[in-house]
Length: 250
Figure 1 (tube, rainbow, N blue to C red):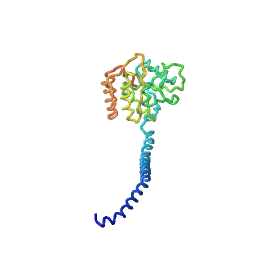
Figure 2: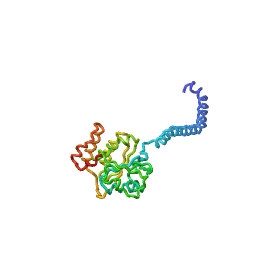
Figure 3: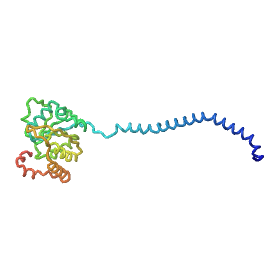
Figure 4: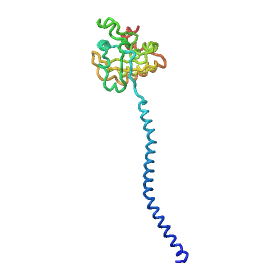
């Protein structure tokens, strides 16, 4: 060991001892500082997350929802006397929704009818004004339209008057067997005029079950789009195929 090392030894020992004491004193403070820093860090992270959660909570009510469907007009597609009289009876008793709506249909949007303002239209039906029960009050708004010769013309004959009257929502009543085809056509024809269309099935005296085939639905769906684009109603073809329907024009 050199003289320089020996001369520095007395100075190094007090410095090392002082450093050890200083570390021992500062160790608890360092632990507390680390704990505080960690706590502050986690608080900052929670604070940064809160706006995102608040944003999600604010956006939840704005998510697209189907509003209540307030029917302006109830359109009954004719063809069965029993079905038409049932529709008139339910309209008079204000029981159309309670008697016809299925539980799953409420998931798509609740249907509401203001019976004091809503009209019931029978389109080319099997009954006329003389067939209505005499007990019906005169204030009941029941109208008849005889211009239709098929499902397509049920809607095309009424679309201009609906647009002129400011009708926005149309509730269609027809047999469950025919409902999907009627809605496919009605949503194209009336939808072109900015109207929303819903439907409910109401059974006739024949008690038809099931649904119509996709071929008939597809055929009338194409016919509806041809009417929207070209204005063709195909009345001549329908009258040629179904000669007895000519008398329903008018």
